[in-house]
Length: 182
Length: 204
Image (cartoon, rainbow over all chains, first blue to last red; front, side, top):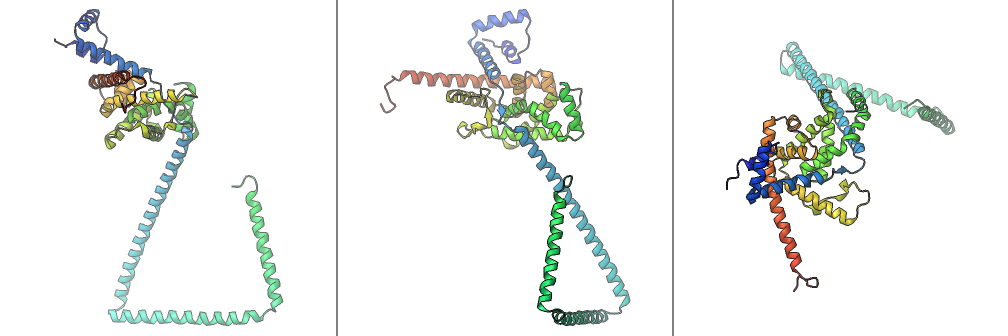
């Protein structure tokens, strides 16, 4: 038995003319295959349309807001990462350029590598000497200061400094708690 | 679109997150439902629905107010689900692993029998839809659950109307064949269960 065009009419689900409807009804009476197809299509359509909409678990909008915030924070973090990388690259370029310029200057100033090495050693020795002098001065100061005040005098001074720090911290905490301040 | 929605959208376009949250509340059900029908399980549907709303919010400046917002939003959700299905080639999901608390039936206090019936119904729908290609599935979901016309489906899926017709034609044939298979399996199970006498156990 020929199933066309009835098969197509059923599957395209389009409006048929009265003549086409009559032909289809006639064919469906005789053809079990097409009748089965029609019943299945109706079954599927009714089954789908009868099933209710499904709701998400409550708090969907809240979860969406959290996700939005996370995404926004992620975007900001990514932007900061990029800014950090760009800054780092710029600094690295600057340092490299400076190094090249200094290198060129040194090579122009000194006739040979040996001379450059000697000057470098001389500068390093001078720097170490200066550090040594500061270290000696600091040792003298540390040895002298404890003798300036008696032990009770140091205790009073420490008490005054502690009280001052405490007052300062409390003032800051009170200021932070004032309305209109974050 | 009602007036409230227009106001919320205008505010959201200006960067007001809270205004868009009203939109999320208003459309969470249809968007989630679409994602559930497309992906077949509540966990993926939740994730896809959330992502669809995020994409809509991100690209709100592309929305044309002369068009239906629901169509635009569901179009975003459909495309996201289609992409996800294509990437993942989603495996069929066992109902035993399903977290039932992801979705809430309309009845606030369903009996265990009602939950079971609903589970079976959802599983049957999923099995029916599983045989369809992602885009065909989207066309079927929009046609049967959202009563979208061919024109609206074409607009949502960014395909021509004739492509929608041919996709639905192909999908209907596959659904009908799948339906017939399911029906014959159910008839077989029923006939097997009625053959056994009430006192008989499988051991005998």
